[in-house]
Image (tube, rainbow, N blue to C red; front, side, top):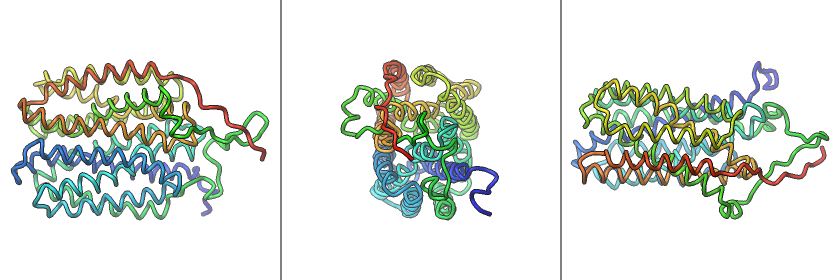
Length: 416
């Protein structure tokens, strides 16, 4: 059947391939929370030592964002996705036979970190902006929901697999899944609608005279001189600090050491992942309709309140309440952040500029991952680091409200 005669626009097939690619990349990112304690038990490493590899991986993941943005702009999403999946697979395999911490630092910290960084929010944002001129907020929500679905699917399964077969089985299973995923990416992924003779969903963007619009862009060197770039970057730094770095890495060990059994925590994490999907999809819908700055302020404020309560949670009922509230806005910040970046600096430069804003997100995550391990080893618990995350959340809410609504300079139309 011809692509043009498909019952749906091919852009939705692109969304499906990208969704599952992001889902598996998100699943890879959940591994540390499951294997931290088994690694400590087998090798005698302390929490700070293991957390360093996690932090290093998060830093590499973050810097993979700008790399991915530049590579996507030059080579297209298809090659970048396939290359990122290949790097992840190559990085996971040696970990199964490691005996020294430098192996974990090198392959998890750098190889897997860069590979997952190439398959992250920057890729999803670029796909949404290339293939959709309408329903873009919804698509961004779907891309964000993939991370939530990864948590929902992979964490409980990884916990059960690690309990029954050991942590190496977790690594091996995910490595196989990521490797297999390269096949549909090569077969079905395309870089632009024009590659299959189509226009984006919603049609080509035109002016009132019918001329095709040249998308606005802002050079990175100019963007970093603006106040709005740093407001977006700093608020997203807090997002990373309060999600991937702290909760994504240390919530499971914290709950186990706080008296909860792993089965209870797995159920809470599943609920968190489910709420994450709901919250991210809702955020995509809201992003198309309401002031994105107010949305971000609301998300960061609610996150701060839930994190402030976390050290005092000792009952499973309260852990489920935390999972519900916190889960609703884990990735909900992504659609409005991407949209504000595209509006302020232009869609044509979204890959490179949002790549660096996302890098700030993962720098925050890396700092929180390492700091969480240090706080745990020095103080015996995570309470103070959770409270610091709550304070940062309130600060991010204020930063979000200060972002300008100014658009990138209007592009000149070209005749068709």
